[in-house]
Image 1 (cartoon, rainbow, N blue to C red):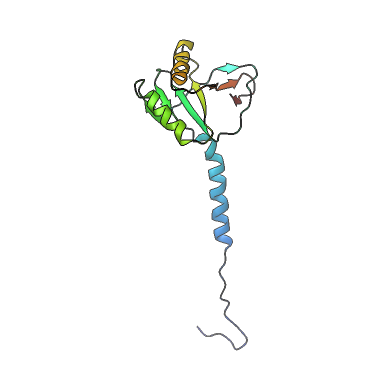
Image 2: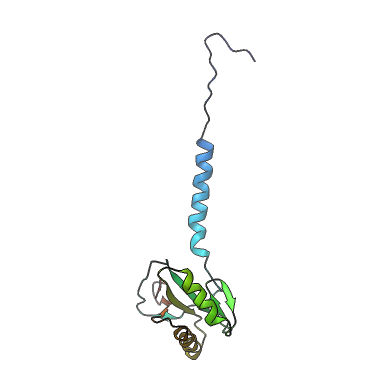
Length: 140
């Protein structure tokens, strides 16, 4: 390929396609991030006015699904392993907060037993996650 005498080659990279791809990926991650939850699928009980607790740093999520199976964050544990697994999760955080997310179909006795097991590990001040009746917002 011959260029005319006045023509020069331009040696620059066109970054527009790269920026387009990065923006599309950013939008995909922003849409998918709220749907990537830890633990099992749990239908939350409804309450009139849940208190919003936006900060999730240091939060240890104890989930109890409809069948009564215990989960710590995203790992299923047996009742015998619960205390040791909770101690390990608490030790891994600098400012740990334990929050229970129980299924709406559970008997409160099952949630109370989980709270007692958490207290037996030496942790005090357990939060509960519920869903607002009207807004659909979650709170502790």
